[in-house]
Length: 329
Image 1 (cartoon, rainbow, N blue to C red):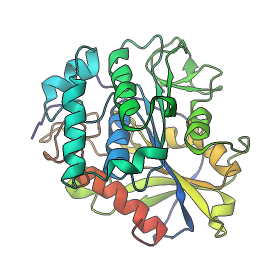
Image 2 (image 1 turned 120 degrees about the vertical axis):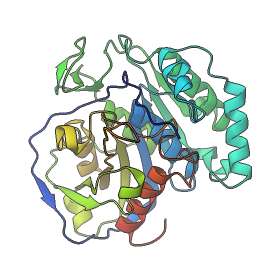
Image 3 (image 1 turned 90 degrees about the vertical axis):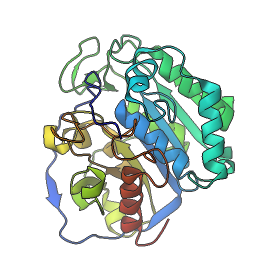
Image 4 (image 1 turned 90 degrees about the horizontal axis):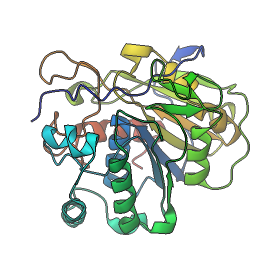
């Protein structure tokens, strides 16, 4: 088990004023199993890829912002801090072989589930924290697993290491808190439209941002509760999709409260399109495992199965989705 934090992975923080309500009981919703997707930023992008391939029977697509290919670190921090962060040869053939082996042994879902999936991969043209190479490698692997035509690669937005929004955050060329960047570019909308097809235009997020329990959080180095955005229609039992938006390092509620959950732009699209948004939350630690910035496990600090269905953090997020649906998805 790797126990040391990749210190350079400082990921996206968000800002917002949306009120948060605590849910004392786990409510269940009318989840449409055909409209479930996942996205993540930086370390969260790696987790999004792990969720997608581990449970491709559930997720209809994935979006990776400033991240790289599935199992890039191969359980080694040195690889994570090397080619998976700074660029260089990641060993595409070896990664594909691992994916195929993991599927054959049931560690991840059958790869046939990916046949109709869509993938959106984004790397900022001014990003000096994570090299463009890992994003290109992710696109190349997904082109093999789904199809080249099903992969959207965006590399021409002049943004530093951050999550682009219409108006929220720092100037597009300025790196710093809240690591949301006002680029007149709606990444949340581009993600959801790519993964789910034609959507109604975004509207005011008039629903509620709740906190919900993350089952088994403690053993997985996660926080007790996640955020959940619930549109008014979903609260009234309409059939709703669900998007899982995974934060990155220094971006959990321990660091910035509900800022990312309120400010990234997903909720406005969710409200207009009958879609819940789940924002899982990972813990930070200054002792073993050394993870003071609260990064997701994409190199093996929880256990060797971190990237599979057996991965502790993957399992908690899946269990949270099952609890929200009131059934095993």
